[in-house]
Image (cartoon, rainbow, N blue to C red):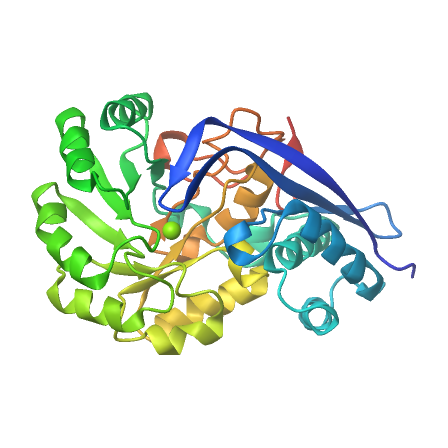
Length: 340
Ligand code: MG
C-alpha cells in the first residue's frame, strides 16, 4: 500500500456583509482545503477554518500540515492512532487537524461507498433547525439583516456592545422569531446579571458565552440568576474541558476548529451527555465543506449553529444546507461534498 498523500490550498472566502462580533470585524476570511488521496484513486476532503483567537491563520495551517503530511500512514482506517500521532507530532493547530480528520473520514466513507452519517449510524432527520447569525452593526442595519434572513426561523444575535439593549429592542420591532444571544466573552458576570431581565423582556431563549473564557465562576454566578440556558463556547474547547464547566453552564458549543477532530467532537457529545449538559454544534466562517463535516454531528445535538457558509458570498462547495433553517445532510458517499 502506498502512503496517503496530502495536498492543501488556500480558500479565500468573503462574507456578504462585514461580519462583526464583540472582538473584531472582517469580511475576508481564508480557510484551507485539504485533500488526502490513497493509492486506489479515492480522495477525501476537509476544510481548516482557522481563527486568530485560537492562534491559527491559514498560513499556520499550511505550516502545520507540512508537519502532519509525513505522519500519515498508508492505512486510512487507523483513524484513532492517526489522530493521536498528529497530536504527537505537533500539538495545538486544531483547525489544521480537524481538516485532516474530516478528509480521512470522507476518504474512508467513500471507500465504503456510503455517506459518513450512515457509517456512523445516524439519522439525518434528527437534526434540529440551525440558527442564522446576525452580526453586530448599527441597530437599523441589524434590522435589515433580520429582514434579509426571513427564511431562518431562529436568529443568533451577536452582542457585546454599548448598545445591546437598543439592538434587542430594534430587532424585536421587526421580528417575532426566536432569538438567541452570543456575547463572545464581552460581558462581566455582573453586567450579564443586569442584562438578564433585558434578555427576558425581548424573549431571548439562549445565552452563549457572556463572560471571558477563564471566568467559570462568573458563569456559575450568572447561572444562579438565569432562567435560560447558558452555553460555554470559548470556555470549552476539548472533551477534557467539560468536567470543569459542569454545574456552571447548561451546555457546551462544540466546533471542529476548536476540538481538532470529528472523533474528539463525538467524544465531547457523549461526555457532555454523561454530565447532563446540553450539546450545541457551531462553526467558524467557513465554506460548505467544513460546515458539512460539522453537520454530521447534528443528529446528536440539541442546538445547531451552522450558518458559516450561508453567510458567504462565494461558497466554493455544495454540501449540507440549512434551507429554511433545516439542516439537510448530503446523500452522496463520504461527506457528500462537491465543488460548485
Ligand atoms: Mg459563540
